[in-house]
Length: 119
Image (cartoon, rainbow, N blue to C red; front, side, top):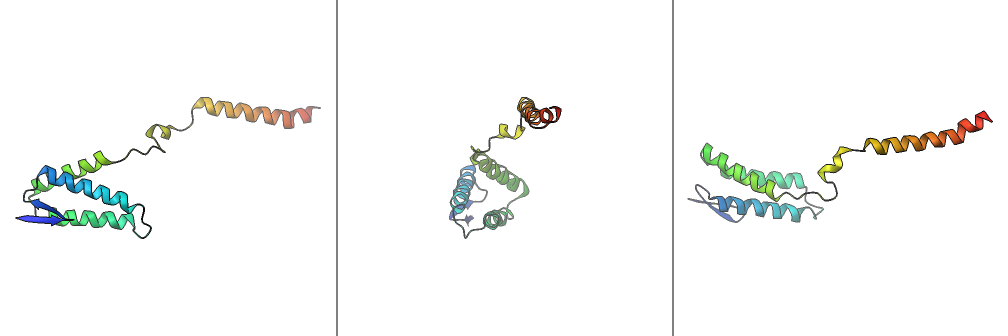
């Protein structure tokens, strides 16, 4: 028995190469959809997942689990690392930088207000 999802023919049970090819195709479609204003990405991704769910609903529970493990694993492998927001940038400011800013503010306050009041 052969089933078709997005132009890909799947044997029952599906092979790993068929699942990986589908995941790569879905990722490619998502990348292309990001540049179209008329496409709502959430709805688009849900439609992709719905087609996959409809296919996997006819599989045995173990085959379904294996399918999703391969499909999701391939999507995670293909995920792009965001160059503009690297993971190490989430650590925030260093204590040294905060200390320098506080010292500069203290000098400004001293020369602007405290010295004027003392004179």
